[in-house]
Length: 199
Image (cartoon, rainbow, N blue to C red; front, side, top):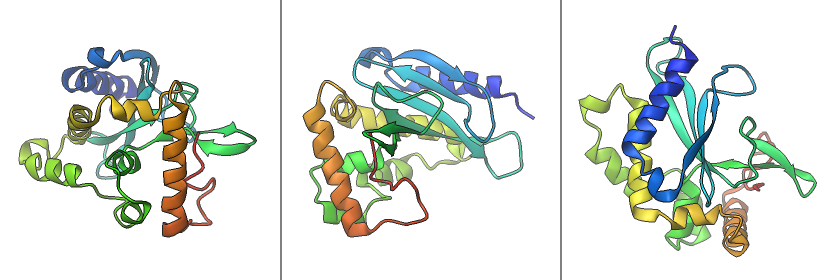
């Protein structure tokens, strides 16, 4: 079985290779190497704008121990390294976020459009078509990190500013946008806290 230290080293290498970390002031501030029910291996980067976590997700396919998937999350500067939620204004809220909803917000899409296209985005579709070669078929962490490098190229620094505590007006606009999206899409009562409970 691959050591989680090796997974973190590989994630860090890929991030340094493909993401313009220095350009946006991102520096590594934490490395989680445990694999248990509460946390997964991850590299955390902090910048003056926000935090980015590149996290181990799962072995792919399940039960093998060589290839794995990774996911990139964005957090505000108060997001804890080792938890996906925190108590904010008296309620449990998600503090680490995927980019997909934010992209629709930055594109100026309506909540109705975002609710219907929550799990897709034109730019990501184009990336998938352009980079779906066999060379990356079994390199899912590289694929994910290169996808975010492309997103940064198109959306930075606006993507980071959504999470920036120095721009509370932008965050509040995004929070209201996400609430409207889930007002339209509906909320799964089995998911607690609700996906639009964010901080």
